[in-house]
Image 1 (cartoon, rainbow, N blue to C red):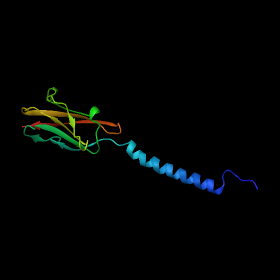
Image 2 (image 1 turned 90 degrees about the vertical axis):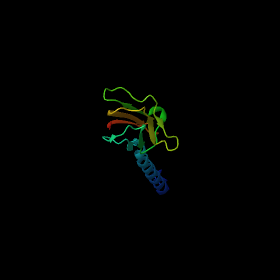
Image 3 (image 1 turned 180 degrees about the vertical axis):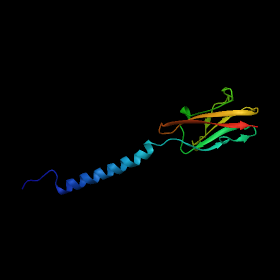
Length: 130
């Protein structure tokens, strides 16, 4: 009797391994396309506020502190924060930067967020100090 390579148990094992590989591939797609996106901002985009002492943004996932940044500029484009942005060491999700006393005017926040998986997102928004 001739035994084929595709014996019933061999086919069953192959199909089972293929199914497992497919599930693992699909679960990693969500992780591969993950990007850090802002969830909360203080001050909020478009807000009119008294001079804030800091700007903070909380993201939907952890950040890589060495590659993430937060810069605040005045209406003339001059950076107003001298301190470097810091990422919260507990959650890795909140980035903040201390501000000097800001005079009235419009300010722009520019952020770069690099997630733990290396994906980079960036954005900006404005707020006004009354």
